[in-house]
Image 1 (cartoon, rainbow, N blue to C red):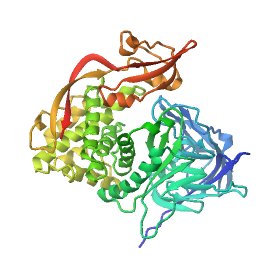
Image 2: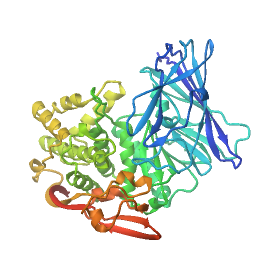
Image 3: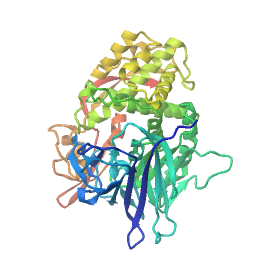
Image 4: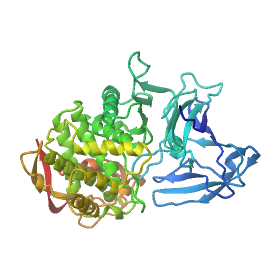
Length: 550
């Protein structure tokens, strides 16, 4: 007998300006019998995230109704930090029956640049608009499961060719998915002259991976990556034993630099004109990294630590390994990206940082979980494969079995944290020893691959000496358009960068992190002159690093 779930309805009505461009949405969110008390926090709304304000809303902008009639929404300040601010929505009296909230959300152009990551607010792009629910929807504070329904209402004067799609499927008719209330908040919503790949449903083929965008894509994304996504998703679904999963990549043109952000069963990929020069191996890694997030995760610890070492570390490791295992890329691709992570890990100036004590806003610290997590999982995979004789990286090993079992546990709403991780490893290795090693890794003890320096592995490890990464100025201030925090006698200082230089362009910082020989280029305007300064962002201090050979 099929279980019946209460339904949360999200109805979106797009608005268009005089030129036919989508300019905003009317949001109608209906919650089934929330039974909220006076002053009880019922919803949470991010008023800003990643230095970008969300859709501006005042209490008087929100119309609220329940079975007794109108009521008022009251804002209460919630937990905030340097990356986000939050307020809670409370009701002016106890609610009766279903609660309906109606308000207008406005979209912005590509003008605001976040210091880290990409924008997820409601965003205008080439006559359409696209945004994550986190930027214009409140999060319903409920732990129940619901039938989450999305429906679009198109006005009579809608421009010709307008289409609408969300994480849950194509509109305008209602589409639904059973899951936690947060699915709507973590979804992506898109309306306008949308183009898609695959463009049409194909007989006898179940499409699992979709790409959606406005306008004309850069050639390498349109020609190569839309098809790569189509090939990758079914293999990933089969690998994680997750039948019925779909994956949508929402692609938009933005300002600043390229990047991606994963939400529920989808991601937003932001590109700039420069992405056309991005090599295939980097695009492949980017697409795969985001897709891994859809299938495997780890719950935050009770003390609040987010376990990003696993969330981002596994995405880094699998983004290097799985395209090779699936036969979509060759061995050179895998070796290149594992070495990029190893070099970034060992040459980080935060090599010995305790992951639980990372300082918000520190770019070096923000990148540590990606590279340390990847290096740890690579080390662990090598230990397990050596112990159990599973040396072919094209075949899943014990680590993969743990990851898949873990993803299934989380899908059944069973928490999976560090202790569960250690106990899972205890089925294969000494529990006390592997637990002690894990906590040491988290605290910042550098990983030692010496035990894997042998010939009975699918790869060979060698020691190399590299200089430690040092940009020499505060790169988190780059989006504000000026050089800031130049350190005396640092590589940036010696190259000629000065505080208050106006920045018009930079090359990719992450590329420098993963390649000890990659220079950084910065184009600046000083007075009436424009100059491009190039230097190697490495200190004179060297460190021994493990690298991989095949």
